[in-house]
Image 1 (cartoon, one colour):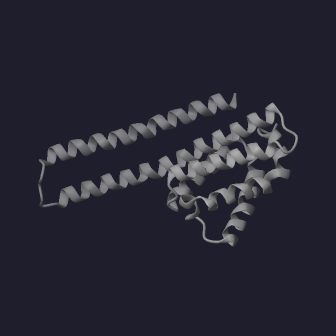
Image 2: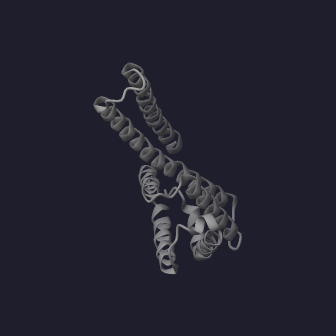
Image 3: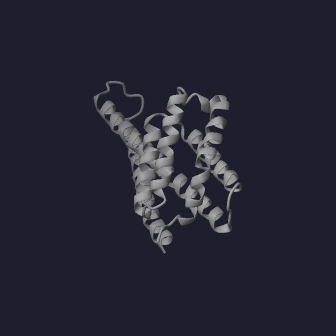
Length: 190
């Protein structure tokens, strides 16, 4: 059984929802800087519509993988997390508004909320993955620099303890996140 079978009722309203979304994004001074021209927006709308349609029949694990990668991608192209989430909330709002133009139901509204909750959660995980990778690289660079540095502002033992603590903190975050992912898989697949 499809996880988001009711979201298929959105298909006739997708163009209007995405159109309203991009109008809002382009009218916002902060958000408009992420877009080059009309052709890019047309391409993005086509790609996003295809993705949304394909995602309606994805299994939960595949949905997670796709949205984690989407978060990593947006991090890599330097879209700030707060701006990505703001955009996602705007898109969700337009789907909710344009749904009112057609057949609407409690089930449909619930699925819209669930879909966007999953999307936001997993894209956030993608952003976190990239931030942790950068932090680890920074720590390794710091170790390399500390070993080769002739300047000693603090005793090396104190510096190393502080960095080891930071490294263990990052590892604990990753470990906790993996446990949470397993738990959420169990809860959401039930």
